[in-house]
Length: 353
Image 1 (spheres, rainbow, N blue to C red):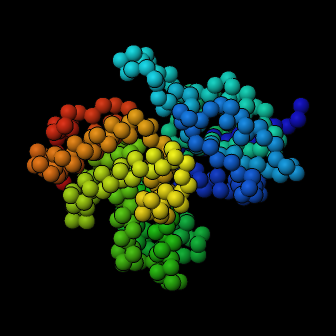
Image 2 (cartoon, one colour):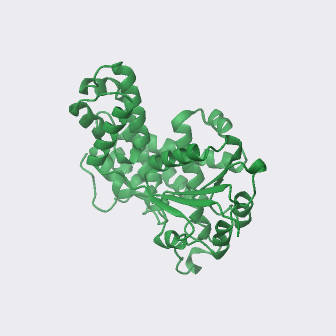
Image 3 (tube, rainbow, N blue to C red):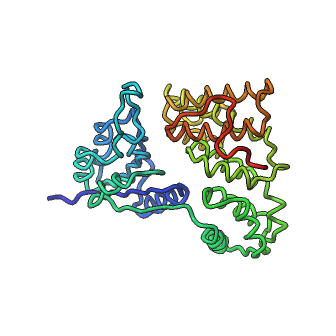
């Protein structure tokens, strides 16, 4: 029997490290850009499409790389049911079907498949045993983040003081290693060969403060209410006034809604960026969130956004309370739950910011 290609499952919330591993694998395989195929899982992706991408042999025996993001969504985890909610029975955990196993077991020898998942069930991981090399990318703990940042700076030929390292890791945590890497690059350029000090972090740290904003919106969109409220409590009220945060969350969801609609219409990333008036990291973040968020839940989130905006403008809720209610409700919707009636407080009351 001819040798089959390789399969990898990269899973975990540390998306930056997973994509770094993907980049390293692509360099190792020496895959040309024309031989890279990307698919996004969800209710619209079919097994036939996966098979066509994975089992197409390359010309001239050149290596091919097939990257499939959120593949587990095909198998029940995030797929929308057409039955009314009251008629739905218990939903099975997503696991790879026999059909998918058959596809992955018979790849052309020149094809490598990488499955990228941010959250995945144990059953899905188990179902790929024997087929895929599994690598987990958990969020780094604070001491691991400091070590990671120090090693990254050293690998780039830079030196950073303990005080600067501590301050930098206070501003950007393990959920955002990509942003932390970007901040380190900026600090290296700013220091221009000398050791990076704490004052340098403060001087160029506006981007790091912005990353706290992303930390909050990421947690909300990902359905992690506990983390979102914890981030909110840790924020400096002077740098992050509640009025600004409330508006920021509404704006982010609005961009996700618009981006999802444009993706459905077949617009490219540059075209979406032009229509939304954004580019770079913010654009990549919006498109990533739009491609992952189930459409029905996004509709429910939009209705909740309108309610919150009206509650603040009419004085039904003060902005701090409305912000907490909105965070809890949007996270609940993202996780597949239901929001509370408009105007009621989340469990635990006010955050005390």
